Image (tube, rainbow, N blue to C red; front, top):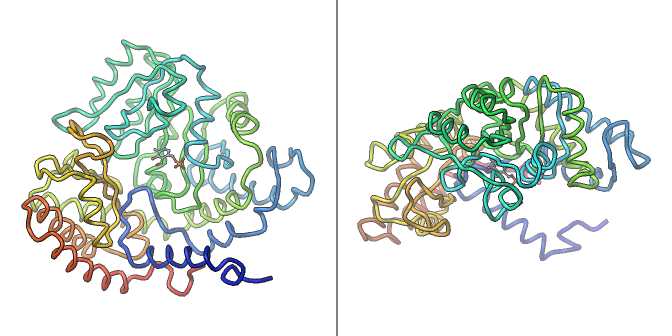
Length: 422
Ligand code: PLP
């Protein structure tokens, strides 16, 4: 059969260009990572051809004997990884896993309490534009405007006043350890279910570098492609729940919101979970946290504001309000220097979510390519130079050009895939 380059040169060239971008740019988007060639091999396999509606041993299609093994491996490995007794590995994405939670555990119109999107929550935790916010009454909680930390007394006060049916832990942008135990206590006080979406910190949790929500939450969801470094996808986990409860979760995924599972992705999840069970994964996650801290330290030392005052995980928010630089402009300028970040709202942000006054910076991807603390400090220093030049209306393009040259040299020293590139 002809190769992709022969059959579709236009698309092959696009993939080659993206490969080159991933090698030559420094990736600081906190939700991204580089998965292994083995994960990509499984994901690019013949399992993409197979229909397997249902669950291992209970399928609506014949010929499932091998994909059953793949899915069971994924289930067994992820249960071991997170020390839990139920896992659904079929959600196509994090948002799908979260949709299954809403479908199975609350009813339309029910009150649900989640972290405000503008203060670190995720769209699927109740944003008005998302199904979660469209079909439920959402009560948001957020950060203390002075400390940038979650105020649990305030969370409890709101919960007692509004009596949510479900309390959501988890976040897309919070650099401190969330108190899962306290959140469960608050949920128990008002008779709410406690659901944690650990998408951002799942890899840290797997490696014991961030407290696991599983001993406290009724149910936990995650993506598999962020710190966990697997293929793009979602999972649902629980521990100590009834068979009936877990059955409801399974039924919500299929037939509730999905048809056939993406068996090639399920297989790739199994590969990623095996990698995460290896001791080297713990070393990696430890470095992820050290690297995020090394970056945050540079910003603080050089007069920049880090929301919450630092980081205990893989990310932090840089608050640019005092620098009078927008997140949108900073993201674009850094992009021209081949440093990839995303703009992000910060507490008390005067700008809209499309402009913002902040950046979200994360260490998972650059740690995977081998950066240690010296490289991360160097990168943070370049970001400071560019943002400060913007703030002082200096020679911004001159600084960008110089930094881009340095970025090129650093990336060449730390290839992501090199010859292993698929
Ligand atoms: N949950 C959290 C906390 C997230 O940060 C994200 C994605 O950024 C998601 C869910 C959604 O995952 P997906 O993009 O796979 O739907």
